[in-house]
Length: 385
Image 1 (spheres, rainbow, N blue to C red):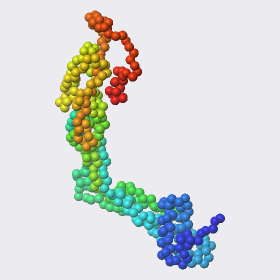
Image 2 (cartoon, one colour; image 1 turned 180 degrees about the vertical axis):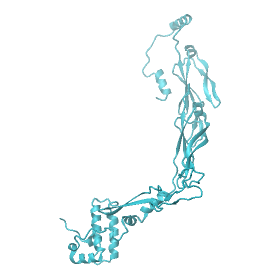
Image 3 (cartoon, rainbow, N blue to C red; image 1 turned 60 degrees about the vertical axis):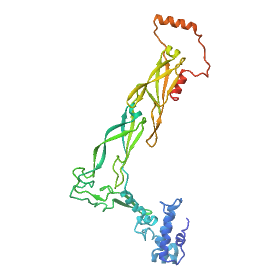
Image 4 (cartoon, rainbow, N blue to C red; image 1 turned 45 degrees about the horizontal axis):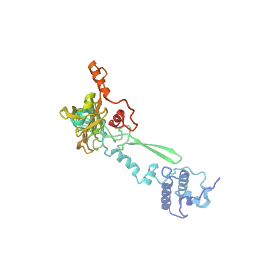
């Protein structure tokens, strides 16, 4: 069995040192080796050894016996309060952290806190997403009770100090361990940490100090928003706690698809079907476009020899570019893919004409792999999707 170390050596003080220096040495060592603070593997054993040494050397009679006869004079007399010289385990924490441990709990609980954010899902049309709109929305949020001005108490009465926690907002449960008294601090269950109790609750809010109320709001949806775009409306969320600022309201946009147009970023896409004669000879066609006033048309000249899958770009007829700061910087383009239709049901006259035409055209050929086909152009047009 290993022999015990000299108690003066444990505390790091010489024999004959004053009681005041012994107490200072104990506090210094306790701070260093407390198991909740120290990272050393033997911190618990060292902490127990330090307390044992201090229990003897802080008592004048035990110290005198120890100075004369050593450990044999005090064996069997241990087991008193290892935190002698402190008001309890919480005072140890006060010594370690300068009282910040306890005071920070109360200050954190009563510190101003920002309110929670709210979310509202808004479905708009394809055109509204492209050009922007204004919409009226309704949503519920918590507001301060007007009847009691947020106190929770019936007008004419006031909250009283909580009798369970005596106004501290905390309940302390003390239990004994081999290290001494351990204090578990929890929020008071009777006042929920406020330190006050309401004896006459407000009849409107039932003592909560707040009620749920429907809020009506007109919101502006900027041009160029897309699916799942979030629009922040500042200070329209839940109210703050202890005087903190309110949260925000986030409008999450959902866009209904369009019958003819697709969107990729700031560009719009539309497919235009033409017949063989128009593709072979060229033709001027009217293409639908989107405007803030609704659908309109613009002219597109399809050159002779146009192949199925070719794409023509009409500049500036896409989606307004929405910048991060909410401003706009120009617009995207309208991309038109031409699809040449091959007729399935021909009358006799059409068959004769095509037979005559076919005799003047070349035979079927196999194109090289490097030549892009119709499906390749479709994939490019859709951005690789």
